[in-house]
Image 1 (cartoon, one colour):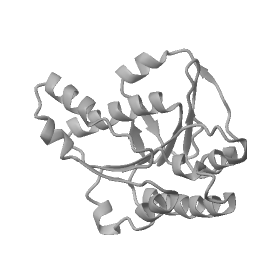
Image 2 (cartoon, one colour):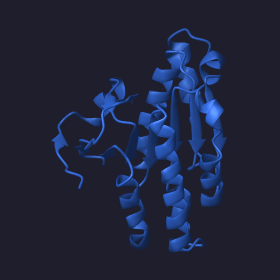
Image 3 (cartoon, rainbow, N blue to C red):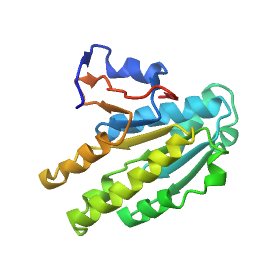
Image 4 (cartoon, helix red, strand yellow):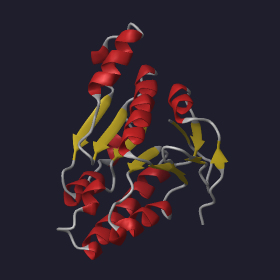
Amino acid sequence: MLKDSAITQPIPNLVEHELLILAQIVALDAPASIAHALTTHSLLQRTLRNESIRLIIGDNHFDAYAIARAALHQQINPGTVLEQIELSRAFTCHQLHRRILTLDDKRLKRWHALYVTGLLDTFYDESISFDEAARLLQELLVRLKYVASGGLPVLITLSPSKQLARTSLAKMVAQNVDAYWRIDRDTLTQPTSTHSQMALAL
């Protein structure tokens, strides 16, 4: 059961300062604009440390220009920073399922973290039955837990569903991660963490 406790720190300060979350798999449940800002900040901080990141995009959003501008601001070649990010996009839940289930175990060792952004966006597609979406999501989460068990931190972002019938998908995610952050425009919720082996920087 996730327990909510309010943190008074405003969202702008959260973006300005790097956080360490003690967990193997972290889920960030937030409106898309907030999730994108935090993820971009996190990617920038990691790549500036010369870390290689695997990024799987499920919501067709990646602000390479923001990362490039930030790199230039710090007098770093944007190309050098962006080369640290290995990305792929998925436009359906079946594609996202395949992207994750076919992650090469040997290549996992090359990365410092795995990011999956907009995890549930394609699962909200009503042309896919709920049972099918739930099955694919469960298989995908099992694979992510296996990846994390090997020592690779995983960050998942998801946006709230506008469809009541699909809200249980977010609950399924919450039951399969080590820390779950729920953020809205007014309140920041502290995660409940069941494990503390890995530190994932946001």
